[in-house]
Image (spheres, rainbow, N blue to C red):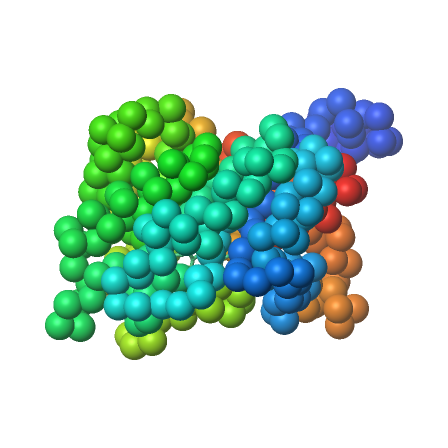
Length: 322
Ligand code: PBG
């Protein structure tokens, strides 16, 4: 009778040996916490589909950021909900816009926390698209100029890092050049290099009040069927000067994360998006899964696939456990 010489269970026998052979670990250093900032004072609106996440006015944002920092989280990424929206998303690049004010307040009141801003137009445009709309189409090159203005305006307000999420062609190089020309070569650029046109953004669009008012984002965000194209997108952003590249969403795209990890040695971020968060929360609420275990397993899997850092709505909850 065949008897195994190698018994894999020997390395799983108790907690100590499991700790010794563990290949991947999760820490608070891995997390970037997304926060939504809105006008007003004392506003703390819980987002229905994202329990534990809020639309925060600037005073509340400062408190929340202080708490995240005290939990050891190194960075936050900000999304703005402006007072009003228009065709060209002027709120995005207004030096007194919601993000610009928020960044200034954070920099004045919370020391030693890295502040990233999402650079996109969809939260600021009346049509909800990530670019300039002309004759029903998104004009790539007209959009670039506005994105560059937005990034420079965020950086002037004090942002440490900008993260363009619009998926226009050439935007990383365009923004990098604008920052450098404005004397801000120290600003780090994290590009949403590989961003898919995904159903998992649903809850975010409720949170940021940014769903497209006509059509969809298929002419600029990537087709979920494509993997080789992800390598081309990432290579372009690296050539154009991205410091960190991101894959978004995370869990349905772990294959993409893994192949980017193999192909490039730039720091790699993964965005564990709103829908991924909401699914775990909803199932846990129904008692169908153990929410805490599912959260930690998901985050660990994203790291195992190759991410160096994770943008996640679980940041605070996971940091409390770790
Ligand atoms: C803006 C942007 C989106 C997300 C991050 N930046 C939404 C979108 O593309 O519609 C989604 C994040 C999430 O779902 O958590 N373009």
